[in-house]
Image (cartoon, rainbow, N blue to C red; front, side, top):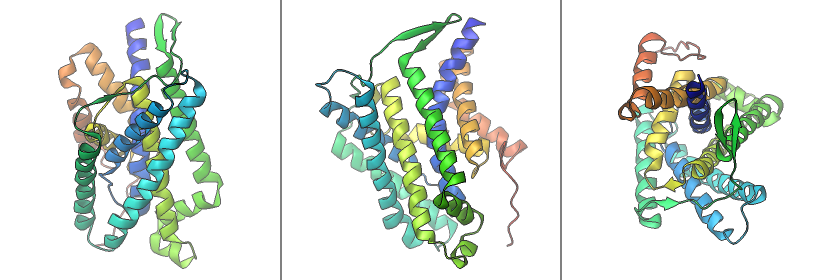
Amino acid sequence: MTTFLQQLVNGLSLGSIYALIALGYTMVYGVLRLINFAHGDVYMIGAYVGYYLSRRLQGREPSLTSAILVMLGSMIACALLGVLIERLAYRPVRREARLTLLITAIGVSLFIENVAQLVFGPDPRFFPSLAPRADFRVAGVRLTSEQVTVIAVSVLLMILLRLFIMKTRTGKAMRAVSFSLDAAKLMGISTDWIISVTFALGSALAAAAGVLIGMQIPKIDPLMGIMYGLKAFVAAVLGGIGSIPGAVLGGLLIGTSEVMVVGYLSSTYREAIAFAILILVLILRPQGLLGRVHKEKV
């Protein structure tokens, strides 16, 4: 039982990372019906921005203040990057066919990955310690300070996002655009602004995930966004693409499933489990666990 609880904690910690990235996928899809395949690379950029900011603060003792400064700096930088990507890459082709948008997203992803390898180099980097480290024992289960931080920060960001979407005027406008882009325009909503805000929020959450993974698994590299991005996309589909609670649920389920497979079967199946789940979901419940069936006129 102790082993199961330990794996569950590990899975929730990893799943929180997937959930933060998946929120960006599901938010962008909600307002544009676009799968932003460059989102995993924004997560990678967030990790690198956090790495260089933490290097600037390396002379200080690890503290909560340093960790907060690094995370906020990374989130702001990636929010600006997300707005830039939307403005330069997606807005000019927004009215084109879905296939054009998809190809554009793949192109942006490849561009960011190759530029990152040129700028940062192909060799992996290792995150310095941002916060004091400690281990805790609860009912025989080992909790590290990094795991506690990842789960706590992820939950806090998800709650803040939920409050923003449900309680603010911009959040209500985002829900209106998600329901109908054309109707939102007729109601006087600046849809371009709302779409930019959506990209900024999703990219900021991805950056937070990048810093958190750097704290928990210090090794980062320019191609780290590929697999994490794909798994987060699977999480968004599992929960119901376009559903924010679904993205959180999907991320936690994917992370927990992955850790359980590694712990009880073999690490060989670590990468396969997410895509096996995706295939099952597409066969049994294409709209996802919390998604809704949308009828479209052809």
